[in-house]
Length: 194
DNA sequence: GCAAGGATATCG
DNA sequence: GATATCCTTGCA
Image 1 (cartoon, rainbow, N blue to C red):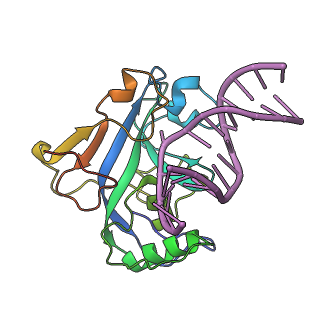
Image 2 (cartoon, chains in turn purple, green, blue):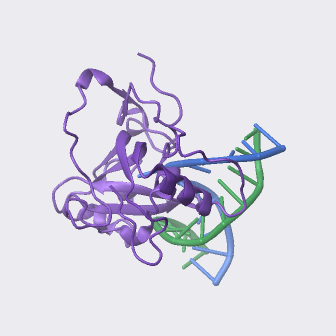
């Protein structure tokens, strides 16, 4: 859930999405995780208490949202890779259009892939690095997590290797730590075959 | 298939 | 201080 902030909060209106794709990054041993170098200025929040946001910049132009998971002192986070738009679709489309200055192309609010991908998801929800450290469980926070009324059945969840970590060593490179909602059209890239 | 783009970690 | 690399995307 993203409530538009103040002056720079982006488009007006509350934006809501259902998380349909995530990846786990656990511990300093995980050779694909930002925590593999130990605690640094960038990843410090990963070592703190759970439930906080960790937002970082990749490829010089896209922010990615993570949720810190393990208890204070252990470095871990869940990368949110895709959400299914639920509410505030117009604001999402507007935010995405505004986020890519040089480019053009139609972004229809009814596009199911409006927030499919870790980078475009942050663009659609106006999530930037300034939100790092936000307590996502605080009902007053501008960005927050809420539990679904009905949990996803385990049979509807697929697992694959994580994306974009070819640089990592085995076994981490192949660990099936990417989880997707097999029934959702909003999953980024290709869905695992079932 | 590949360029755009800037911060980050590492090395000199 | 310099440089290789990066948890991506959208267009050629």
